[in-house]
Image (cartoon, rainbow, N blue to C red; front, side, top):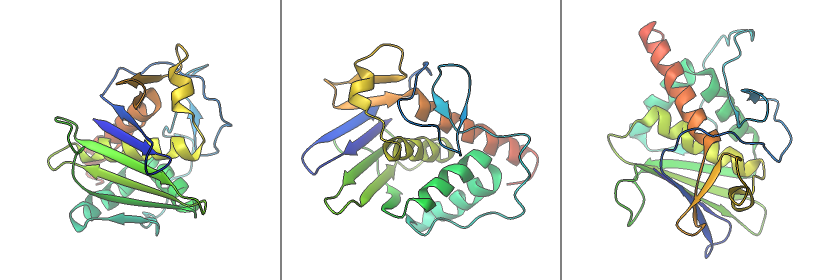
Length: 203
């Protein structure tokens, strides 16, 4: 699984592979939409059992563009997963961010079912292009990629964290690619919530 982050058109950082979740100590402030899974561990979005239930499925964020084939599935995820709703709420609130989700894996790299390319533009806006291969596990991969986008909104310095031990970030291929325990955990959390909802007949 490939993740790509570009701060300029010429410089790309990426994250590849599904790794075992590792501990991490975030360098940024805690978001209101996030919760700690334990002391000094990677921050992920988790379901709050004490939170009041949402009365209606929120709409797809206006700054999120989807290919038609993925639209119904994303709406289903919004109805089934509190974690995914929180991810989408953060994306919706980032007015300087535009996200697209379409078909496609990682160009030139075999076996990677998903990629995200993030461009930080001179005017302060951010463009994130998510590509997911057909027949991939859409629930987990969309949430995984969205968490990588949120990491960048939070200002996570992947290169710096990868140089330190036990941060939950690892560098691959000379530091041009990265994977994070935070994104892995978020993807798995959303997939579990969606499966539970479907077993209950709720999505």
